[in-house]
Length: 464
Ligand SMILES: CC(=O)SCCNC(=O)CCNC(=O)[C@H](O)C(C)(C)COP(=O)(O)OP(=O)(O)OC[C@H]1O[C@@H](n2cnc3c(N)ncnc32)[C@H](O)[C@@H]1OP(=O)(O)O
Image (cartoon, rainbow, N blue to C red; front, side, top):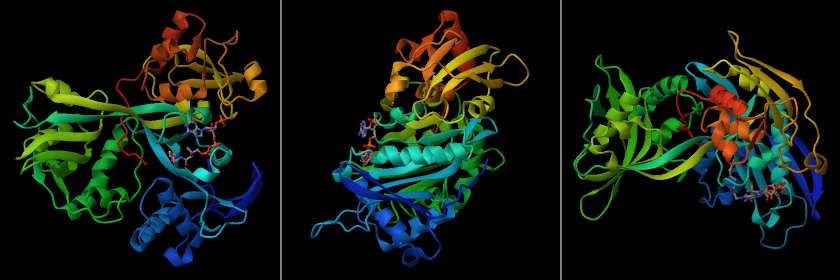
């Protein structure tokens, strides 16, 4: 697999609905603002697309450094048509898109190369002309050709990405824990917590995160910009330092740092208020509980909120009063797109010995076909056994073709459903009852369910 597809500048022109566009693909170079006029306009267009403020010079310089050091692949679409007086000039892209290389944890010490997609914006006056489809198809084709088995994104709206083969693959919750009288646990907590110096935390956090990442299914490698963010030195949303952020570190019995939390106090009326968790990281669930205990024990705090909590949280089960743990929202965190079923399915851990033949429908073609997964031997064997029969929807070129069960297959599904099953975010039977999986019979469904089941819910704490 080529790990770094080149960022050499390329461009192509095309027309849609009476407009002419130029699609440019490029990367940021060294030299900051002066050396990157196109990337600067790309960054301005991204902020504009997500209703953010006009970026300051300081934030442009930081973002350019990040784009360069992570070798982010940028796509910008420019309108080639005349611009009326006072409208944004042709140098400002009407659409943006980027992708970069990362890795996704599948199980303890098992990572899969992952192609991350982000910063997708299309100016409303150019929307619904196929610009997103064009950028996404070109980019995923590049990912597939470079040998990436999986792509991932975090979505603004759950309705957009299924048609491109992405399925909701990990979920998180937003929780609030009542803290007026601290946190009473059924079992004693481990280690101890000390308030930390934010700059020192920025040095320590990458190491603790790496331990979490190595062990936690669903975790994605983080890029360098996280550490200034979680330590309050630079908030990438506002483009400034955030002096309200406080941090604390957890130590084990040997004074070894094995967890941290970064948080903010949100004042209510008077002196009391709530705490908002920015980042809470440890490879150990017990340490995470100890960090919660610290937060809930802080004076003047009525409630602790965590927008990025895990689906099946040991904290709730450890609390004497589990009613104090309130899930306010559940949302899909990571959308996964299997590009190469053989590589992706061979790499993942299995807990049961089964043989299942799956028919996969993929309107973009990367994964379309019949595959046999055999986990009866020492190592899983995944083979493509052939094409699947064409359907009327395939012939009509539908982006979400109806799934039919071929005679030779045990089960059949669209590729987005495999993305949802991949890390065990959902049971196969749930997708079957939702009408998303076709099965030969209930024994085949049971085999698929056993095959894809995992010992724990995947947990991703690194939105991008
Ligand atoms: C990974 C991320 O970055 S998530 C952030 C996504 N960006 C945003 O939410 C910013 C605001 N929105 C936008 O910029 C744009 O409206 C986008 C990016 C969502 C869509 O861009 P467009 O160029 O209009 O999409 P395009 O015309 O290529 O449509 C592609 C397909 O998606 C569908 N689609 C487009 N927008 C939406 C939507 N908001 N909800 C549901 N479906 C949508 C279209 O119907 C089309 O379907 P089809 O090809 O199966 O017929």
